[in-house]
Image (cartoon, rainbow, N blue to C red; front, side, top):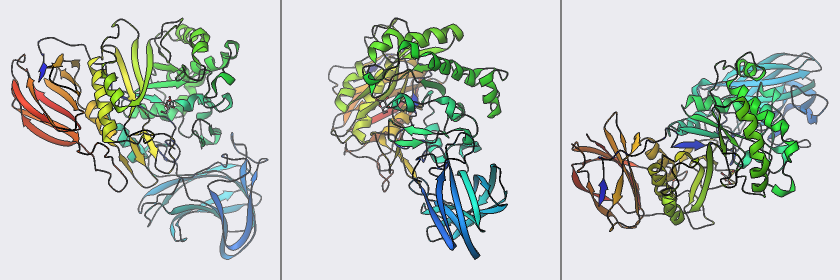
Length: 607
Ligand code: AHR
């Protein structure tokens, strides 16, 4: 059975315990959470070709090329459109089909942005079309002339469905037109300008993350110094964000989802922001680790990031935040120095100087900011928190549910900043119920040890079904739709059902391969009992709550289970594995049968 001891107060549970981690991996930003619909919108993905774009000549002739002599803002080149002839009713233009499709919904108003200049005073048409050229919506750009201008226009779709659509920017008269930053946004999460795709943003919000770690992961450090994440190139108008090659994961990142958008999103979902910063290590490791004397500009970048997030509006960087629309500070309190610095020959430089240099400078200027280190041993400065990562086979993940049971209670607190169970048989690492069970078992250990586990974050959040580099992931999506994995439901079950303090509990010796954590919310009197049954048969346990003064009879349950451990959710069966809510009769001592392969949360009212 399971003895739950309400007579002994357990440790308080950190409000950051169940967090989430966003990395620009698996096309999670452009084509994903970032709502932009136009791929290669600023023609900066490639200096010699024009990915994402093609031409459309309708009763007209012309040609296009990249033009490095004409560009606006921080862009390196524009698209030059030489229109030689347009017959009556015709047009010559360029066409973009989005990131693996472009969704147009009837009745929706889109916001188009076009930067343009021209040799002649001219007019451009921006059209939404289906794949056969039927116009779904249109808008007109008037007054294009010899100076770069930004034009913003609403376009309402009067019909449209699916993702086989395109946006067309076309000239209706001869001449030369240069285009830059052709952007199209649907309505965004909370209506934020330059904002997020609603279905994806809502799915993360529904996890009620206690913290939000961003933007990587390997994305920050990249394969080499030239392509590390440089937050200063992710702020301001999009025309001032040149974008960069995401060398960790092999595709271009527009950086439209920049530090401001991340901080705004964390605030919007009520999550503590945890900003990861570049600390001089790259995935190619030993070939190019920054020396101590090279670190100064990057330390300054970290200090400036804090000023950008929190500084007064009169400060250089605080003013830029205010100009972007957020004069109030974001109250960024947690900075992670680097990522997985024990890898790629990084450990010795990290413990000798890389961490120290950042630590000393940041603590001197911002003593209240908490610093997270990625290496635990031999550090010559004591960080506030250590980031541990776990990607393990399911059984090992379950074994690790006891990993922090004996962690010295006064040692540096732990942030489990990435973890996922490699549920299937490797190399099949796809999300599955088996993996979700492994993670749930592991998470019971994080909860029971929340006096030393300050926070955690699953990783990674998102997987574009047309461009995946990493599995397992929690939220699957394409241009049309999104659904979640069993692993997501475990996160949601835990984050929605955790008390404010741990309740000491233990199994009797006959219980094998079952994991638990119990917690109590003192204010509401709700007791949450989480039980993970990793057995392929059901398990009936006697729950002993005799230490409670009273237990209300009506309890509620949420159960995630299947006879098929390999089961998962798919595009065609997005709800194959989903939690089922129910009720049960509780008392001071009662039996409950936990199904085979299950994760269960029982909620009871106790005094
Ligand atoms: O989440 C994928 C990768 O796993 C992260 O970029 C890295 O931190 C970890 O190794």
